[in-house]
Image (cartoon, rainbow, N blue to C red; front, side, top):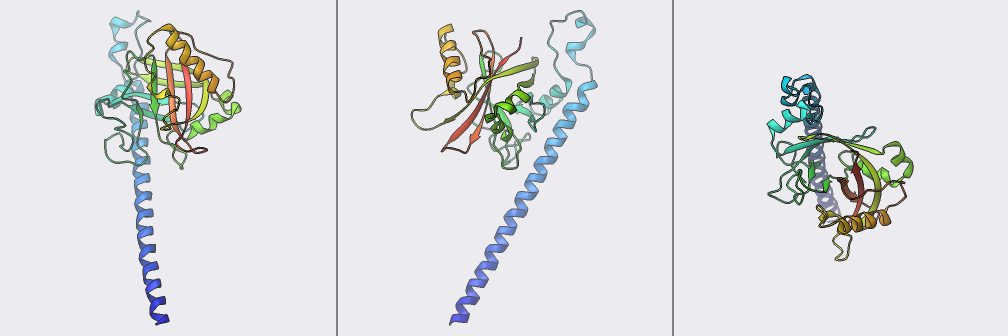
Length: 257
């Protein structure tokens, strides 16, 4: 009887081991496919840089105020109209396209550029935002254990890391934009009494804008010495933060005019 039980335990263990190996292989293949896709997107984005764009036509040669739209971004937008930008923080792995699908909440949370399932998902602009008119653009991304997507935002808990990486490059269909980080904070969400940074997209008044900036600065982990004033366009990057339940690390920046 004892040997029979031991045999059953061994058989179950082997089955569980086989299932575990299956899922590990599946995760490995999925991760490799996602890496290949990101490389392909980056290649399209970079190789198209030498192509001419409508903004660079002969009629615009003397118009220095015309926006400079990267042809690489236009090429990606042509492949998937949901691609509206490219976000990069120099010196980090954050170097990805930004998607926007306002018809459905968190549409790209677990979808790749081609809209297929992906654990990594994509960087995506909140459906509450309007890329053209919002005072604050809120971009979400996963905090992956692999270090990909928005995992590097967690490093902004260190003021030293902030000083080494104070700028965010965001290329859009309207042109190239550079943002200067002025606050970094941690906050829980879904508590019923949390700081709703994720709902602030358009200021109703000057005082509304000022109150929001004040609330952000008060929560900042350290003083960057920078702030924003009414009229400054904001960029907010948000991802999960694991020192607290339902935690988020939030990086807030203002556009450099």
